Image (tube, rainbow over all chains, first blue to last red; front, side, top):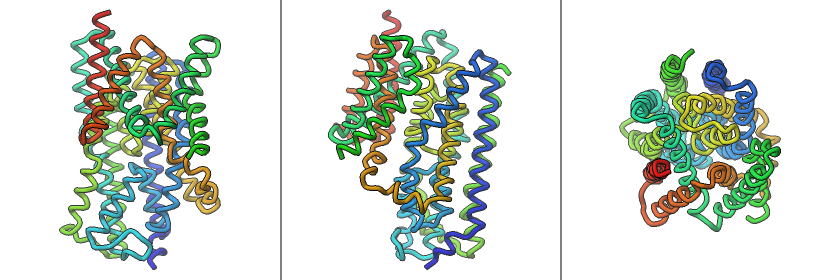
Length: 234
Length: 217
């Protein structure tokens, strides 16, 4: 078996350095945004709340990534799985990319189903093919953002805010369908439970404004209750 | 720093850092090939590259165009590096702006999105790194059969509460949300169009409905 070759120390170092670079990018963005936020009137408290939400709300959704890591690790080795699941990758996408690469060489993503060459081919397709979205973002975010800014010059602030609210509601309609209503007897049930929990919390803090702090925990509370129900129902 | 200077800096830094990270990621398989002296036959492998790129490509314009007013460019640059835009970064951003009462499509919203997405990126990378270190002892817990449904349905569990918070905070527009949802459901159930495309159509319809309704009022 080639498992030793899939887990050589220099690969861990490479991936570790790359992930530190990603963290540094995020920290630089955040530092600049923090300073800008203060200069446009956001308070320290608001910014801290944003940071706390970002840090905490992502804990539970990241756990399934760990499960995928555990399943990919024996097949592809730790460094490659670690890299792909930390950067750009998602569970279903990585398995698809590795399988597609190996199939094109007549090999298979099962233990003993591929050679070292097949593993390297999978690494190529997963990293270079998978990172194409980074190239897209580097090339296209600026032109699209500029188009939005130009379009906004034709409207007053009220209209811009209304359009923003419309976009947000449209995104919510889409996720309601894709992550809920499109499969009403499976994910739809969990979506519905979470929606009801969220709705109750909204009702409570709208009726009793001194309980407005509950809005900070709405997503976390609804998510945990719905996940608990998922364990009971399915 | 005024907003224009800030935006210019965001693009400048976002583009340069994205290119550098892309190079770092792409260099990994090159280093593997050099180390093992084993280069894939690209004449055989190119369809796999194409299949993988085409698998995700419809989402790139859809997410960039659709999420730009909510997340802004800075958060999008960051999110495209680490992925999970729809299931992690976007809901975290929307939850925060809802909770703080920040209007979408504003400078404050885009600035806050960077802070939120940065926090989310730190969590994701730290947890996966921790998982690499302690994967073996974690395995029994993460693979416990009774917990599997919780992990399987974590994304709908996030979005239910988030949608409730977003659409119920201002009930006068609830009907507009219902119309957009029915419109989207039609495409999901009755057509075979890629969901990335009807996401854009749904967002466009919703923006139109909101603008039309606002004009009427």
